[in-house]
Length: 219
Image (cartoon, rainbow, N blue to C red):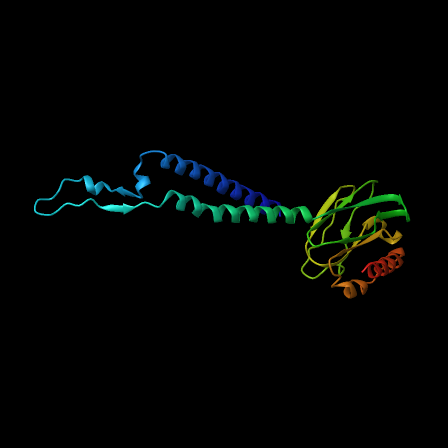
């Protein structure tokens, strides 16, 4: 959302500044003896030499009223301001969830903490390597249809923004057999049945069974 929010903010700023300067210009025109006050201006044709045998009349061209021009800018400025506000609010509503990768945590050795995250579409998940020799990667078959998997390098932080609703199964590749897995639920768990059906091994099997049970209870 950030590029959209910044673009909307710049558009809004340009519109508001333009409207302000236009208003100042129209106010100055009102206070002078400029022809704008009369609502008409003489075109260059009115000062051309008259043709012999033909009457010459000044050509009048209507000039938009200063207030009319000023007011015509207001809807554009207001619409841009509302667009900017909505974009910024959308970005502000998104949250960041931090998952630590630990050698020892509240549930024992080699864990993601927390190992169950309830998120909303558009939220960011950050995997923080608090201890060494860990990574975070999605498990094949345990992500929603249309979503992209992710995989971090060893001992490196990873931030991902999840827009697709569903459950995401995550593992630490070196410690998967020790049960170092996590479950992220984004919005509605639309692919929960498919994710549950993925075959697990070692302690990961019991860990995921517990996590799915907690996710259902939380809903």
